Image (tube, rainbow, N blue to C red; front, side, top):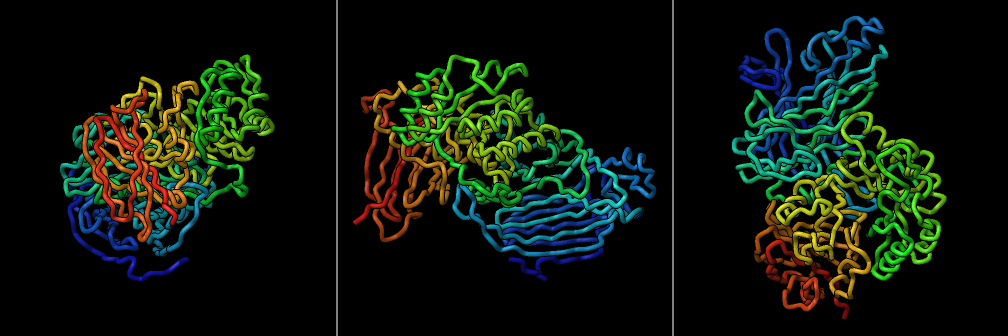
Length: 640
């Protein structure tokens, strides 16, 4: 539903100020020729955009952002640089912009609108996603020629700010080359950031001044005024990945850095730059639907074959091992078994053929047996084979009855590989194949458009076997980007946490395709009763609440499925006691809460105790968590 809101935008002209922004290392006199204000629908966010000019008419743009009357961003530059000269020379175009792209932009039109709607995802962390925002679109022309038009598109949701540059058609037929984007984020003094050098890397809480390189997105920050913030990217599907780097000329300022230059044919929009804020770090997780809202609706009409679930992998690559896992999966409400790499030969070569098994394995028989037991089969395929033959093998896999593909070691960052990956995802969808993308790739909300992408890695999970400090950091940082295939372990002695901690991770770490028993075999199971929690826990949710949490210390996540709730609570390397308040439950009902907790008195190799208690709305429960420990809770309504 569209609403035109006059108070939405306020314009003020002619203010004299001193300003320092990207590309300006000295204080320069600038005159404000344009100011626009925008508020979120709930009025918690206030955004101010300014265009300033010096005496020669050169322009700079800046913005600032407040949340609940507290500063999130001080004056921050908006800047993008283009070099269209090769195309302009080739077509002998006259009257072309000669300076920086943002220098001589003239405002030609200002539009505003409000949206208040909602939509239902195929799966997710919530059943209904609210889409409510106020927007201004400012259309500029280059002073030298009206052929060059660009919008600044600004949206304020109740969940945060989204900004992008949008380039109109150019009637001369030239293409555009974006060489830099220097969108700035200037924070108040003493801001701390959870620095992460690569997508499967460790986190370090650092003052901005101590950065020594670039950090990946999303980036979570802690402000001295008590707010938490997150910088993110949305709808990066035909573009290049960006990182955050520290400005060398402006204090407390991060800026976007593109992986490489981008050649585009107008019209097109850049990916959205997103800023979220919250009074607690859990609010950032609860508001991460913002990234989905900034992507296109699903392009897949028939989605009946897209079925989230739980998956285990067979490391033996034998018929016996595969059937053992299939039997285990059927008995424990798991949905899929994965054949991991090397089933078709060496992975890191173009010489292997992923259209046939290269080992002593009767794959058709395993697929048949899985189908008989109600278990689907996934296949790992590495980048080399995908690049070489995905158009050939995907129809073959569909004919075989394969449920999905795990993409391995995909290249990320460049325009070429980003475009290739999304085109491959579409080819998978055309053949009714679900997708799990591993290694450095992270979603930017495009699973709304291509819901066959159930999950991705881009996460330092149990392949690297991190400690509990790391696990209590992940949800507040990487988790804001959405689904992450953490590869939850259980029996392997390599885990650096308790077993109840691993149980809880199946709730804390959201993934519509949840990998369980990583590094384990079906034979590891010896009737441990707490495995019931893995049997019961869903991967698709009607609601998600963060009950408590401090980044790097602890988190308690509650997720609802139908009439049941599942809770995962984990602590870092330190023992602690947490109190849970069940005030999120419906009133006038009684519930049974089965608590799975670490207990050294239990005479099993996993030492997890089960205890049933009766609770109702407002009940409280103390959890005594061991160092690197956790607890899982399954809540079901007691019927009279």
